[in-house]
Image (cartoon, rainbow, N blue to C red; front, side):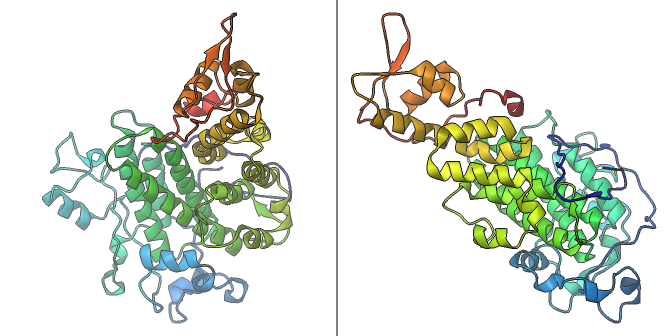
Length: 422
């Protein structure tokens, strides 16, 4: 991806590339407005000359306001205010408007990453980042409080560079980036920026939420369940907006470079059988996709994994993940690996002959985990293990004490993908 944030397109069916980490300069400087125009959809008022100069032929652009439920949600939550909302053209050249920065200094409302030399009353243009505001009235939106696209791009790079910070617990880092990326999406929405540079930004935001989905599983605390829930909520909203942007910018006979992988995330979110991520049936959603996406290796992988999960085919489930999963796909699936392993232990316990205990060495290979971890999992599920004369660990079958661990499944490495755990 080049530095300007422009997205390359590719022809049908070549493999997509993806990265397991964020890249960014980590710095921010005041900059002049870019000469690159932003693209608007028909939120644009017919009387807004400046906005019309930046738009496509309106007949060629699908109606952004009436696409899917996600766009209505963003209009209400991330900057839109009413049906007569007219996009603004932001002029703020800093990560945080000066007025907000001054007010938050006075109120001591500065995150740890925004404090100048640790002082909760002082910050600087290179540290302060605009906060998300849930309710915004169209009457009070000022161009000087809205950041244009080039500034939003730099701000996002600065935020994502903090993701690997080790100076603070991850939940503190996540909370800061979580709020400030919502503010970025809000500014994009208020300006109705729906071009390919916006696609790149939304992909980076989705990456952040997916990586957080994995990392938050190892965090503890009184409010960690709430953080996990809110992160998943924003992940699904950001994905829905990204899919709308793909559709808005699509040309005939082409798909975006990373689209197949990002579409596959929606399928993998259905591993949670208790939820429907975006309120739309998976079969209907799949019918609306271009055939090149359906046939892509990323989508074929996600559909196979979902099928094996629902069938209880644990051997194929783990072999497929170990052989084909990308880092981001693994981050989504990690939560369900423990569930599938417990299901496999249940099958072995119930189906094997009582007089023939099952070797843990064999079972650990099937489930792609260490033998010591395999024994710990059996014990956590209420099953006892024994050893033969040679010291080989065994699982006696037909035990009636099997249960799902009350405290949830402990995270064990998936052999072959240990690098994803780091």
